[in-house]
Picture 1: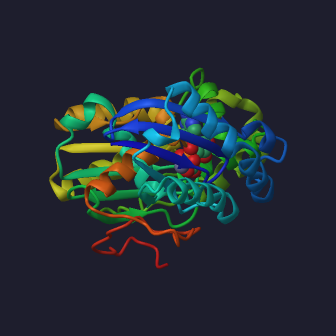
Picture 2: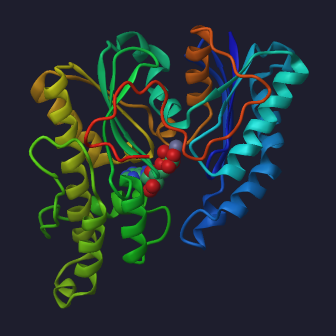
Length: 346
Ligand code: KG4
Ligand code: ZN
């Protein structure tokens, strides 16, 4: 089945065509980062208008690149939350038109679920053995999930305040580095000493699988304003901050692995572009004999390939959305079987 994926939840307008949930026929991502950069973050009103302007050209482009006509599409999948409501509406409305006019199935996809489905593309898909623990780290979310099988999620822990990506972005802003912060800090940290400054790690107790990054963010801000800061280079501060984030992400993922006795870890979301997170997680998993999977760089950040892939799996499970599909800015990831103590009440 050939599935068209559409993604407009934040600041990327994306369309992709994927065959049978794993073979990518075409993918186009139009990033709005340049437009939002001067404001130091995503401006929802501007994002919505840019999506309106770009969604049809992006859709046309992906069809041109694949050489496919609308008639060859078998279904359309779209992110319908979580995200910015105006931004989500553009993708959902477009998907409804495609579905309604062509008479093909429509499926609404959770954007976070889509992120983790970026792991199921290509040959790796056949090697992933359930159950797995998944670390999902993006600009808006940080969570640990126990996944029993396709679509069966248990939320083990999530952030109590800032998301990991948000912490990178805010720390970069406070250091005057620019937006988005993750890639900038990652690059600067390469030449820094991760042990130069001892920033706090929020372990939140011996067994906790919850996260908290706001204390760390404030610690970096206070440090950068202090007199001692002059003795340290920006790369040293970046490397030390990054190390504090990565150590907690890896440590808590390994706690979840141990608690649930799984032998497979997945990572997903934009922060998985981080080079230190990739290498430290690989070391930790290798030491425990655990298989680790994470998407290629372009599939970690927002794209529509992951949406088409997640949609394909839902369609295969017999699910369909109606033309009354709605958008949900804080849509929880589907099928949560239990909310643990570490999970923030909604
Ligand atoms: O998943 P994503 O593209 O969008 C959301 O759904 O939020 O994630 C974007 C986030 C941003 O906060 C960005 O700073 C972060 O991912 N990010 C990184 C890196 N590349 C992107 N964080 C750390 N290191 C990176 N190399
Ligand atoms: Zn995302």
